[in-house]
Amino acid sequence: MTEREFRFGVVAGRAPSGAEWAATARRAEELGYDTILVPDTRNTFAPFPALAAAAAVTTSLHIGTYVVSAPNRAPGLVAWESETLQELSDGRFELGIGGGRPGAAEDAASLGADFGTPGERLDRVASTIEAVRKLENAPPVMVAASRPRMLRLAAAQADIVALGLPPQTTEPLLARTVSQLRDAAGERFDELELHLNVAAVAATVDAIPSWLSRMVGGDPRDMAWNGGIAFLVGSAERIADLLCRRREEFDVSYIGVSGLFMEQFAPVIKIIRG
Image 1 (cartoon, one colour):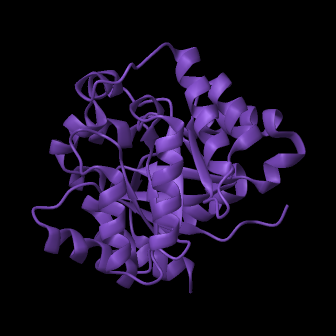
Image 2 (image 1 turned 135 degrees about the vertical axis):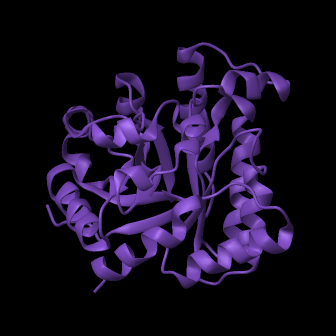
Image 3 (image 1 turned 90 degrees about the horizontal axis):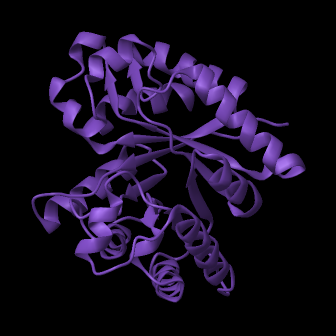
């Protein structure tokens, strides 16, 4: 297998104003990021209009959902929104979809949607992908997955697999998850792009801000000390070496970085791209 080139995304979902949101998108493009990724939560902007605004002020930056919670929208509606964003962005849209992160049931209820059982949510993801694939200019599809049934669905239908592992996950569990995906995908595994999210980037563990605890569900410094894969610690050179090793060992080549650490991670992009 030929190693994929790295891609880097900024995960961002809110700004104090439209002008500052536009500035975030332009800065991501300036720094060499490939995508801006917007979550689908009630605490962030609605992803589709936010991505349209980002596309309007950039030229090469791709835009993507990270990830649409399938219960919140009918498959036909997601296909319509995707088709529109593909056209308005001149083909720069990437649809990310999943069965719903922790807390997504409350979001669904507030939107008047039926969250459903795990099996129903899995079926909704599959139906949505089917609707999007029928588009004349269908976007690439990212599926967020970590458990066996969703991994099997992603293995069969995704272009990109976002490995939806908790931030405290260590490399042995990452290895097992990638192995499950490889077994499910068979020969198709080489066609899949694997994505991991980064919660924090810091020079030392002690420099990781403690206020991240409310976002990662625990003490981020403890998670980093114990080898949590969502925390990148050290010099830009050290982080670049780590990511290259993980690409070699685990085939992870698409890195999503929290917008809170967009500037801190940018030197890593320069090192990797030479």
